[in-house]
Length: 337
Image (tube, rainbow, N blue to C red; front, side, top):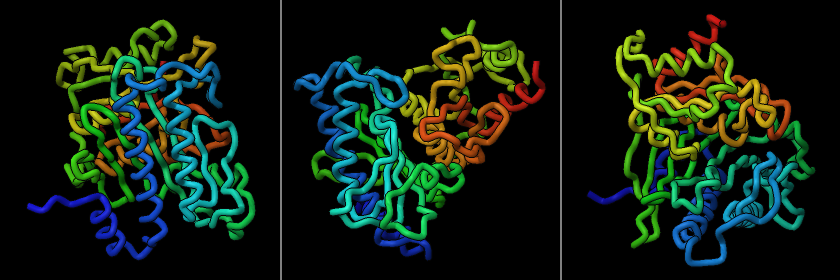
């Protein structure tokens, strides 16, 4: 059987959607090229002078790794020249990234986490690039975009996806017509379709959370986690703890096998009073993928895709994965302490 490339898949779906444009396909193709470059550098990171820290902190207060900076620069360089964007935002930069006047503009906005899980780089753990695409609501695309142009609800996303750099490089994306995955074949330099119309199990057997923060959680959050550890709970099965500490890797595993990833609010941790994960850069794009695959994503009470962002780097608690597992989390939070 002839393998389907990601470009062929994009063109096929473009024909099926009256809203799709050549600009959108070009945007994803530029993202794919950027990911190939990042994947190449990740795979040879130990051979070059690209490991370690830069000595700086990003807009979210995290220590910047050299590969973080490299991935950010590659994506900005490629995407600002694509002629399909009117603005970008990156977890590595505090403000809106404008498209220079010397380049043509388009109607789309790209929001990205250039290298998620970068604290695990030196340990050779899977890391990834998360992206989210919105359509600009501005009537004048030639002006500089301001923060209000980017602060859209996750439900407004045109597309979302991620690249995961591990034992192989995989791309997962959705445009609202199912979740599809592609694996990079290094022999031909193409992403080839490896799974289509992914449906995550309605209930899993895995819970993913950093239990070292137990003493930073309130009683309700402790009961949430305890529910997945209790063999006699009404979930009806014993769950295994699997926590990599790289969001994109934990999410990808649970997407395929079923389960729930949890990063609660750490009420007594002054470093992360509202949780650690970023609504626009991490939670919203993965929530769109989860829902398209039949799963669910919440901050404990509210649907992630319904949250109204007030800040570019706004943080949120995140519970995401199989529908029945996330619903259990929501039920406990709604019952309260």
